[in-house]
Image 1 (cartoon, rainbow over the protein chains, first blue to last red):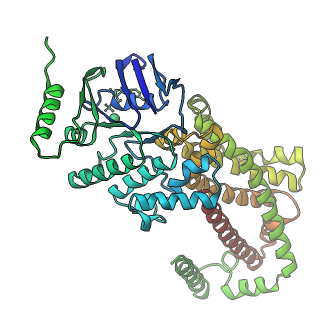
Image 2 (cartoon, rainbow over the protein chains, first blue to last red):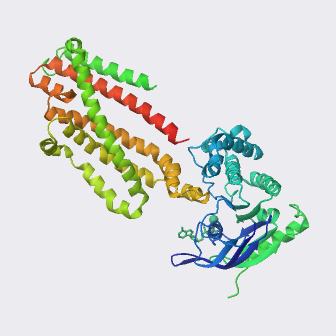
Image 3 (tube, rainbow over the protein chains, first blue to last red):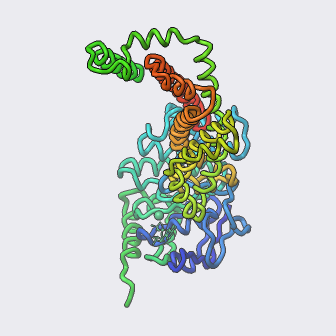
Length: 246
Length: 246
Ligand SMILES: Nc1ncnc2c1ncn2[C@@H]1O[C@H](COP(=O)(O)OP(=O)(O)O)[C@@H](O)[C@H]1O
Ligand SMILES: [Mg+2]
C-alpha cells in the first residue's frame, strides 16, 4: 500500500489549513506527521482518509485517486477515539465487520481474537465508560485492525495518556503493526513519540501546514536515551522551534 | 427502590385522605371518606370499568402510535438538516405551546363524537413533544462518531440506523413518554367533553350527579390505569433500548 500526496492544499472557507504538501508513504512504512498544535496535521490526515476534499493537489493510494473513504484499504484511529459508548468493547470492534456483512458468529470470533491481541481479552463485555484511557485506546486500535485495511491512519492516539502508558502503548503498537505488516501514518506533536516510532518523520510548519523537512530515522531505530536518539530529538526541536527569517 | 417510592407515595396519600375525611375537616361531597370510595370501587361492575379503560387505552395508543410513526422520522429528518432545523424547530416548539384542546370541537365536528376525534386529539398532543425531543436528541449526535462510521464505509442509511438512532434513543424515549402521557390525558379530556364511553365519560357522568364516591372511584381507577400503562411503557422502552443500543 503506497500513498502519494502531491501539492495538497486544504481549506476551511477562507482559512488555509495546508499548502502544497508533498510526501509519500511506502508499503510497510511508519511515517509520522509532526507539527505544532493547530498547524493542520489532523486536516492532512482526514484528507488522506478521504474525509476531507482537497482544495488543490491530489492524494493517491496505490495509484488510485482518493475521493472518499476507502474502508477496505484505509482504517482510522481518531484523536478522540470515536468509540460508540452504547456498544461493548467487542461490539465496537465488530463495527467494520458488520459493515462488510460478516456473519455474527465470525464477527464475534474475530473481535475476540483482536481484543486478545491488544491485551483486552477480559474486557470484551465492558463498555467504553468502564475502561481506562489506555484500554479505550486499545479498543480503538483493535477496531482499526478489524477492518483488515493495509493502511492505518492514527491521529495523536496517545495524546490523552500519561507518559509511561504512552511509551508502553507506543512500543506495543509498533510491534503489533510490524507484525501485521501495516503501512502507517501517525500524527503527533510529541517529538519523543515521533523519534522512537517512525521510519520517516514529516515535519510541518505552523499553519498553514507546509512540509519543512522529511527526516529519515536510521535502522535499527535508535533506543530512547542513546546518543543517536538525542541527536534526532535535537534536530526535530531545531526544526520545530526554528524562527522563520523575517 | 422504585416500588418502595410508589408504596410510600400511595401510603402517604391514603393516610392524608383518611385523616382529612375521618376528622370531618372536609365536606364529604368534595372529598368522600375513604371507605365509601372503596365501597364504590367494589360496587362498580368490573365489566364497566374494564370496558371504559380498554376504550380509553386503545384510543390513546392508536393516537400515540400514529404520532410516533410521523414524528420520529420527521424529527430525524429535521434534526439532521441545519436548514430544516432553523426553519421548523421554533415553529414546532411554538405550536406545542398552544392549548390545542380548544380544537376539540372542530375535531368533533369533522370526525364525529366517537373514537376518531379522540384519537386525533391524543395523536395531535403526542406529536409535538415527540418530534421536538427527537430533533433535539438527533442534534446531540457526536459528529466524531458520524465521521468514524463514515470512514468505515457506512452508507447514509447506516449512519442513521447505527449512529444517529442509537445515540438519540434515550432522548427520543423521553419524548415518547411525555407524548404517551399527553395522549392519555387528552383522550380522557375529549371523552369528558363529549361522547358516551371511556374513562373520561365515566368521570363526567359521575361528577354531574354529585356522586362523589363514584367520581372518586373513577379517579382511583384512572390513576391505576396510568400506573399500569406507565409500567408497560417502561418495559417496552427498555426492550427497545436493549435492541437498538447494543
Ligand atoms: N471543521 C473545521 N472548520 C473550520 N476550521 C477548522 C476545522 N477543522 C480544523 N480547522 C482549523 O484548521 C486548522 C488546522 O486544524 P487541525 O488540522 O485540526 O490542526 P492540528 O491537528 O495540527 O492541531 C486550525 O486552525 C483549525 O482551527
Ligand atoms: Mg489534531
